[in-house]
Length: 130
Image (cartoon, rainbow, N blue to C red; front, side, top):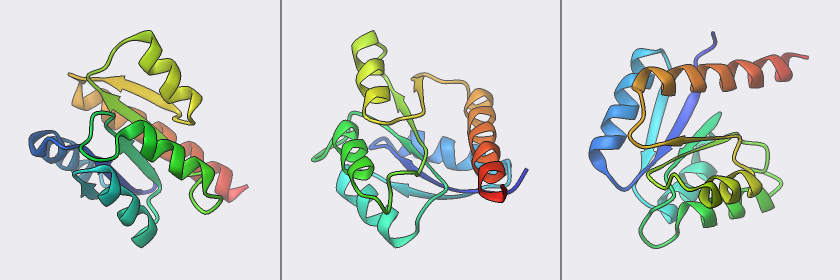
């Protein structure tokens, strides 16, 4: 499995620490952002291989971040996984409709998170190689 550069976006420092720890342990590099505007700046600074995006963020929420990234041809193909406490079918539907590839609800299993990230980054690496 190739190492990937992951951007984790959440306004809860404990969640960011957990995500970063688990993904680094799995061999990935991780950048973090605590709000929507910071996330967009980080995406433009270091184009990540995958984005883990919370929905409930200060200033610009995750739906807005997802929509902005999908409208920009330079970022439209970056895979996005939403990680949110919002477990409603409407939230899931909207997140996927805006272009997220997956949706994980909080609380989440760190092992499942790593598995999903590995699967999505492997698929992306395979597509890039072909």
